[in-house]
Image (cartoon, rainbow over all chains, first blue to last red; front, side, top):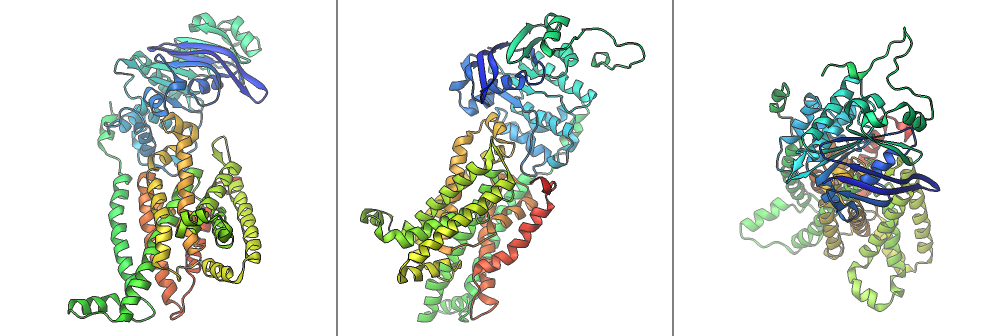
Amino acid sequence: MSLIAKGIHVRYGTREALRGVGLTALPGQMTAIVGPNGSGKSTLLGAITASLPFRGQVSLNGRDIGTMKPWELASQRAVLPQASRLAFPFSVIEVVRLGLQSGTAGDRPEVPMQALARVGLAHYADRSFHELSGGEAQRVMLARVLAQVWAPVEDGQPRWLLLDEPVSSLDIAHQLQVMEIARAFARAGGGVIAVMHDLNLTALFADRVAILAEGRRLAFGTPGEVLTDDILSRAYGCALRVSAPPPAGIPYILPHAASA
Amino acid sequence: MTAVTEIEAAPRDRLSRARSLHWVLAGALGLACIASLQIGATGVTLSAMLAKLGQGEALSQMERVVLLDIRLPRLAMCVLVGAALAVSGAAMQGLFRNPLADPGIVGVGAGAGLGAILAIVLGAVLPAWIIDLTGNQMVPFAAFLGGWGSTILLYRLSTRHGRTSVATMLLAGIAIGALAGAVSGILVYIADDRQLRDLTFWGLGSLAGASWAKVLSAGPLILLSVAAALRLGRALNGLALGEATAVHIGIDVQRMKSLAILAVAGATGAAVAVSGGIGFIGIVVPHLLRLASGPDHRTLLFNSALLGAVLLILADVIARVVIAPAELPIGIVTAVLGAPVFLWILLRRRGLVEL
């Protein structure tokens, strides 16, 4: 019962975005994918979510995703995209309900409001989605995704949250809130894979980290194992030092210091 | 959690409002039908005829002809064509993820018209078995094929990676419309006198030539297409989130798109085949309904069918009475009412420059 990607190759035209990347994500854990711009993070998530053509194999809870129907996939995993453009003026609660009608909580009409409350936006239920700020829109989309896989474990099988840069347009408080939600989902038995930009949040919340660079997997392990000076410097192509405070006089704010 | 109290304050439910709108619009449709049968150039009224029947008197020959052979088939055409235009507009807007997509504006109507003209002018040279097989369905079916081809072409031209460019869509629509118009012009040039007469009547863009034969020729395709479109509500809602997300929430997007294109082409084609080009119903009706009860396609499509029928019946009544005993082509009435609404939608959009 896990999410396993093997030998994933993806080409964009002549460019090879991914060259044989593998990843095993376990339920109960948060697995982060990090790496510099253009390293193939979102492309790897795109292959795992069957959103783009790829060579290789992805299995979800023991089944090859290539053999699963869209509605079967939708009942086992929900995907949060980087940015969402909504074509028509749906209200916030209507957007969250779009998640419900596809998931397996279809007979529980209270779930969308609970999901919206989970991201702290229950009072926005009647607003038009188009009036939201970028960060609010991203949290509403997270509520939609949560409503789709509301129970982290169902029928003895873990459900999966696949998040593409879930905190990219959020302030620090909401970054922490969203990461807490994802971690709680994993602690309750579900599986989480998140493409992350922020190495500090990754270090704080991820159980396993895959570091990609130039379409290959450079390292995979616990944050302590892979977030090292050597690996990060190689991945990002600049000399990075872990746990080195900046010179005196330059303030730095780390989410690690926030009290839960 | 503090959120509990917020959960209890149930959000106002636009879906149930949209569902009660079904009944309101059905009632309006009934009233519009009565008005359409009551009003006309001859002075024959429905109420007078009903009174006569109530006293056991027989209707005069003229009254029977006016009611059964003129007004009733015309009413049936209004209902069918109005529903077809409005539903195909709503479905196309959902498919293109854009409230400005309308079959009449983006060249699908012109493509369907080309199909119809092809059938009228070249139909006679087709093999006999095709003519026998299609019978009185040939012109609507050819219009459906023309509309289908132009919808697929338009979609290919204006959509890249699941995103539709409005500017490309409108401009490609102009090009497709112009091309279809040019070919239609050539066909008119080579048509013989009898075909020219057919074409002229057809191209008037009016319901003046309504007959039971036309109702029977377009009705089946329209009913089939509208029924298909009504099944797309949930999928079109998902598509509003974008093509990738629609797949992620479990929608078979490729199948849904094919079905939507078929339904749009079928409804538009059949409507154009019997009524020529009647514009703006497809854009005005869904837009008004979105303002009234939200964009949920599960109710929007059916409400569009009802309101489209109501509006076309009313436009037809207006067309018949404003310059009675003559009558305006109905396309003029819908354009006068619809074009300002189209401009209003266009100008209200934020980021107009980035089209």
